[in-house]
Amino acid sequence: MPIASSRTAALYDRVRRVIPPIEWPAFTGDIEAILDLKRQRNAVILAHNYQTPEIFHCVADIVGDSLALARKAMTVEADVIVLAGVHFMAETAKLLNPDKTVLIPDTQAGCSLADSITAKDVRLLRQRYPGIPIVTYVNTSAAVKAESDICCTSGNAKAVVEALGVPQVIMLPDEYLAQNIAAQTAVKVIAWKGHCEVHERFTPTDIRQLREDHPGVTVLAHPECPPEVVAEVDFSGSTAAMSDYVGQQRPARVVLMTECSMSDNVAVDHPDVEFIRPCNLCPHMKRITLTNIRTALEQNRHVVAIDPEIAGRARRAVERMLAV
Ligand code: 13P
Ligand code: SF4
Image (cartoon, rainbow, N blue to C red; front, side):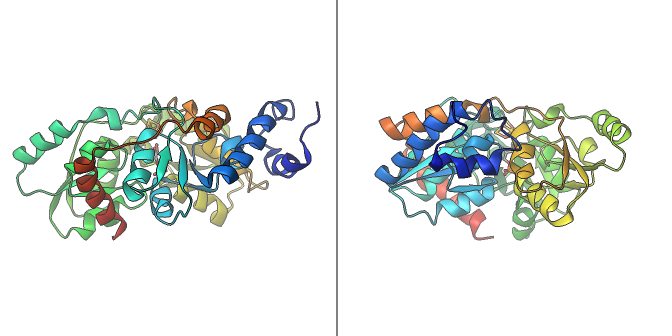
């Protein structure tokens, strides 16, 4: 079988260092079909940094961290947005584009953080801590956002917390992100007990072992990792911040303590950097495939819908974040 048709040959050139030639023919049919469907349906694909390289580099129109996807979702001019990421990201895109069709290729693409808290939990927190603003990570349902004062992402959490101009905030649902932000600011942070099932598994022992096995390695970690992990790394930031760090600092060897596809996607643009690859897969992100993106566009599924009353309040919390 040929490695690629003329249309996909240029795409394969881009990803050849992270997709073996034997795997590529399995992708080309779906890639061709998706490129055609995007034109026919006036659709764009927004893909998170944790999507696999054949999605991220070959069919996505807009890529980035949660903050970038939310910001760029507002500027999209297409009729249809396909969100290659998890459900809360699709809901955020819908909140910011109420008149567009937003599709998520698999409705089961959830998030352990989003599952860790309900709208009722937030109402109870508000009763327990009257007057203390509630800062909610975007990794939550629209119903939880609707009970919140403002949203944040890992890319802007410190700025959001400090912009409120108060001595204390509630930050939910990620306990570790809350603790990592608390370590960088004078604002007191009350946390919830949610965790990311991918990042909670990294340990300080992993980092020490990596440094011993790969002398001189630069270690980066997502702030959803436990604080004792973040304390031992060279840099911690959102997925976009980690990608920028590699681009700007050009470490000779680097390890990204985060989801596995991140290293593949960043490695494509940095052939001079050696990526050491212990990583954890996010089973939710991995539910999105080229095949179900193609089906989403062919069959117009699954359409993201949010109760209008919830959407109005959730949108305010997201827009307030975007204004910071
Ligand atoms: P970012 O906002 O840093 O892309 O993180 C999203 C996420 O789900 C990390 O696990
Ligand atoms: Fe949620 Fe963690 Fe997966 Fe991100 S990596 S979507 S926070 S479970």
